Image (tube, rainbow, N blue to C red; front, side):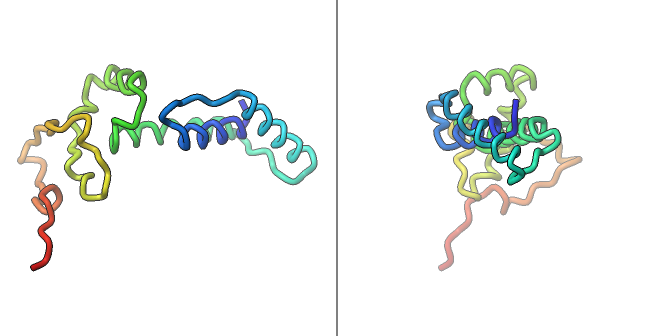
Length: 133
């Protein structure tokens, strides 16, 4: 699988992630354009490009699972919950709400049980910020 196929698939999925369908004709067209540009010397061949793109894509899916799990397909989320022993539900998503993410839509009551012997939480990190008077 070429680098162009991964890039195009990634950006097409990101743009239209609600339907998840990527027409293979577009992938083939962009792959053909990429290889023509490589043969003409305009673009370089990226060594291990497919592995690099797979790594970025996997990292993005895992990041999205932590930050906004409702944006992931249910099949992906179910698979990740299964291999992690349902630990995806117990992330402290209150911390991400301050950055504008809607992290708690899927798991509104999920909170990790923290041992205060090892963890200290600053209340300013998870309480609502009061507006100035």
